[in-house]
Length: 302
Image (cartoon, rainbow, N blue to C red):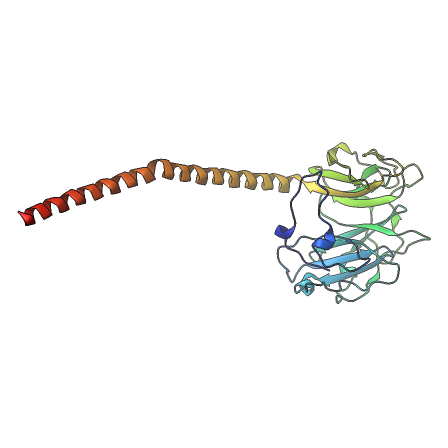
């Protein structure tokens, strides 16, 4: 695990190629980025939950990662061939959804996973069949639904109530009916009607659409097309954008913009009107003092 201040990230346009991550973080040979988390403070009551592709889950207090060295910290012990599939922040009482590539999903309580040290390997979250692997993890929130998207650009929304809470380590329930046409599951997100969904393909194409345009379906439904992709460039990543947060950010942005305009206008007013007037008064005062000195000198001389 590495830590980086947000202002240290270079800004760029949506079509910019970006900066190589190796220029920002001292990553070792063969390492690749698995997840990104944003935190304001390392609070004691917050937890970091990690899930691996082999179905291992680990929960650690966020404060354990407070002092991150420049060359990083060990966040989780990994078995050979295993990789991190997802990372989420929790508050100690969340319920989690874990999805696999072959369309299985399990809903568990995070308290089923005990708190562990940074270097722990974790415990079994879901039992995988054959070559199946975990692809994503999502955190439940009230009044929302589960969004599932496949590699071929198909997706659907399902009510959270259709997934019963199970014990950790179970087989899970059928979440998506995958086939050759739709491909395997690439990710899940917990969304509601006010959210927007952003989909990113493997060739860098991104689209944004309202979640309300995707109708609710059953657990075993095949879904509808949400993004056009081909056999080479598959759907790679999805994320949800909460409109309430977006609106608040826009309001703050415009307030800051108006404040800067006010400061700029005030400075112009001072330099155009106030400063010349002060200089004029100072000049007149100096002239008056000059003539007074002349009169005084004349009087003394006389």
